[in-house]
Image (cartoon, rainbow, N blue to C red; front, side):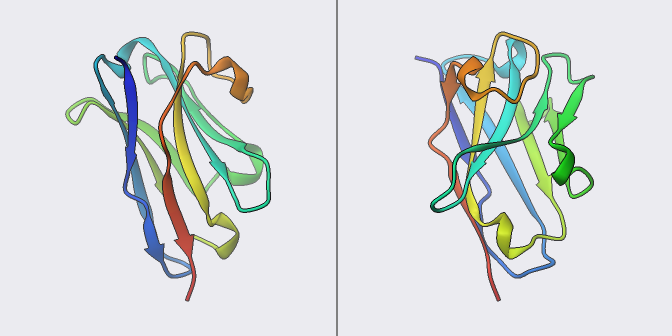
Amino acid sequence: QFQLVESGGGLVQPGGSLRLSCVASGGTLDWYAIGWFRQAPGKEREAVACVNATGEDRNYVQSLKGRFTISRNYAEKSVDLQINNLRPDDTAVYYCAATFRLCTTTSSHFVYWGQGTQVTVSS
């Protein structure tokens, strides 16, 4: 059974950095565009970034561009999300998801989802 697993979340001070990873079990990420989404308490889930199957095309939500970097790590067989200069409003559960389609911010286009990893930004 194909499953996605996120890791790398935690408690970090404002201004710090985290690197989240998404790996697959029961299959490979290579066939999918992979997106990262997040859901803050009391808010709807929102798209963060997406990378296509080849790793050549990366898309970011405009408001987050600059602090977030999505990449494929072929050695680790993961898709990573580097987050720099973390702010308290980045606090959320971060999910990775897989789609057979091209990169999109539409969550309903993603067919596989991980369980999420908690990121908490607080001093």
